[in-house]
Length: 565
Image 1 (spheres, helix red, strand yellow):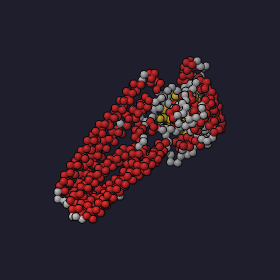
Image 2 (cartoon, rainbow, N blue to C red):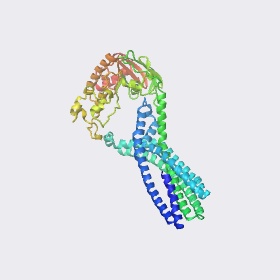
Image 3 (tube, helix red, strand yellow):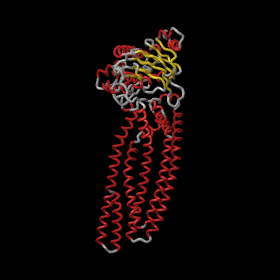
Image 4 (spheres, rainbow, N blue to C red):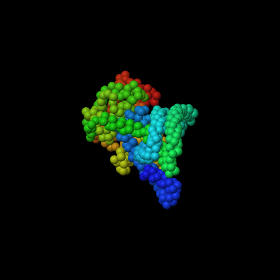
């Protein structure tokens, strides 16, 4: 509509001038009234257009639909290997908060269509006055091309510096966060972290500044060329035209100039959206490829384990590395067994647990669950039959303790009896008693709640792991690393008893990782990992009767802690 109003305004202004020149007062007045009305309507239409674009299309669709789609796509990927790949992390970093730009770019496509119509009509009318004016379209291509070139330069450098930008943000959060604050101050490492953050910032920003400077030179050059051509052509045509035609030409020329400017601005906006669209489409394609690579007709998890989990020649190497994290591991975990995994740091203990949880896909070998390849079992179904407390557990510092525990089994989030039992199993009753609102106390000082110690947070994580009452795989990855010795022993006694109940009812396998060997002596099977390989396995008694890596580690720890052998 604004296109029609702009053209109508130009024609009405010509009528006003021609009416005045030829002493046709009535025609001039009517044309003037029409021109005034066209101006008012143009302002109203432009205002409504802005409101619709910003508040309805962009403001609503962006935060609700696009953000939701991106979040669901990321959360819907079965494994977590991509979270350790720089190309994925760089693109997700670009997508962070980009919903507005994405939808604005789509809306701009519509606006660009109307701008092209305005250009076409303006050129048609100008061409009817003098065909030479049509050559303005050719000159308009120059700033379009130079702006495209400028945006390409900016997009390339922003993708190229995304990793450094992500690094500086991480260092900033490290320097300003509450977690490392004490260590940084005691060690006096704050200035060094700040220096590294500044260096990463400078490297990212200087690259972007130089790129934007080159882009600005390209853009300015294109507009200078168009302005010179525009001024020359308009001046050569006006000399032989009537007064009304001059007004028409000037009005349409200004409108054309504005349309070209708007068109180029809109093309730039679309190209800017392309900076966000590329990682968005990359993510969509990545999600599709991940889903296609899964089993076409996945099988459900068994209701109970009859034979157990057989690991055959398992090998896995983390992306971007060459040394295997696990190499040719073969062992059977019997149904109903409590299995301890021991070894020095970096031996592959947590990697084994993540493979059993189907977080990674093995590079070679297989994991068989009662004879069925774990890769063929539907991931969400297997996860629904898994409970776990990991060493890098989540804290969720914005919800009540009861809600945080209920995250362990959302199907029973309203079951207060089950939540209470999970808290009791984790030995967290004393924690609840100290909180001002009991289980309804919001946790985390960041959001106005109550802060917890590391050990208390770990108890909350253990309670989440106890929410499911019928898991087939129960994982405790360094579950008591932040607890004192009495609390650790009490919790291990509870979980050992729980693992026996799970074994009797569902043949569940409990896998425990711990560096404190005294807590693992009651395990049915102990796996000993060393430099990514399984070097020994058996019961505590079996392993202690022979010269093994386990007996060596146990003896060293017993000497250090004066533990009985």
